[in-house]
Amino acid sequence: MQSTEANPAINPETGNVLPWNPGEKPLMLAPMQGLTNRALRELFTTWVRPDVVWTEFMRVNSQSEKKLLMPGDVRECAAEENGVPLVVQLIGHGRDALVAAARTAQKAGAVHINLNMGCPYGRMTSGLTGGGMLKRPELLEEIIPALREEIRGSFSVKIRAGYDDPRQIFTLLPLFERSKVDFLVLHPRTVRQAYEGFADHAVTAEVIRQTSIPVIANGDIRSAARGLELLEKTGAAGLMLGRGGIGEPMLFERLRGRACAEPDVAERRAMLHRYLSELLPLYARLFCGDMQVLGKIKGVVSNVEDHELERELKQLKRAKNLTAFRAAVADLAP
Ligand SMILES: Cc1cc2nc3c(=O)[nH]c(=O)nc-3n(C[C@H](O)[C@H](O)[C@H](O)COP(=O)(O)O)c2cc1C
Image 1 (spheres, protein in one colour):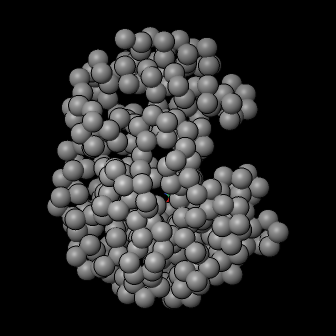
Image 2 (tube, helix red, strand yellow):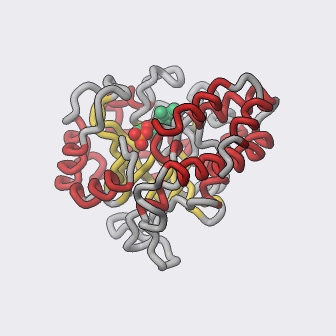
């Protein structure tokens, strides 16, 4: 959904730069731990070019002032990659640690910083983090304004609909508005729900009606038709693709109307061939040793949903070593 304008949008409420162009409904590649590493992002930013890409979450270590963020994470902090805006995502707890981590990330080059308030998997550090933050909403009253004060570029929040109540989000909107959060990414499941059931985008639509903050819709977007319907029905400011985008990168282009909305099996097979052929050398450069490369690339394959390519997908998933995996990729060649 790219516009032709080169200047980024400015949030009129905060005067902050947003990671998309004015008039654009950005299509974002979701942050996904273990998947959206810099090799995968490189492939996406040079191939289907999401309008915005995100780092995997960076853990904030509130126990050590000197090692708030891992050195490898600090090296990833940047304003953009291959000309595509990059959002740096933090996960952690404790106002002071989060603020100091945001400062470190900015010094290292980050312009767009996001707070993870959605991860459903336990305690990522020594306190309530990610979706766990929603268990103690009173703590957010000081964390969110303090982060806003520190972050000079865009400050966004990626959030579930609630911890166990899908209407909790509505109680938090006044805080986000008061604190001048630049945009929200909403995955309308509860934290307790994890990935069960479905993303209830009626909640997305209601949030959008109730707030002036731009809301990016996220959750269960696996086809161009579904994404376009969501944009139209909810009035979302943009879309974020997670599993659907990882499983089928061309979904970005299909949503833009630049690739066939319903490709036939030959086209999907050719896409998968290109995808894995191009990802293999990038993964070989980033990861150490064949087994790690194999494990990581199988993680990508597990997001591909295609009943007509079941046999080929099984072959890829069953490969015991990289040689067998490469042979299975070669079999996909048109
Ligand atoms: C394997 C995996 C890793 C994820 N890692 C992150 C993460 O690092 N940060 C985050 O905010 N969300 C993370 N998520 C959530 C996704 O960004 C997204 O919100 C969720 O998958 C719903 O979108 P989807 O239905 O398009 O996949 C992860 C999800 C999965 C399945």
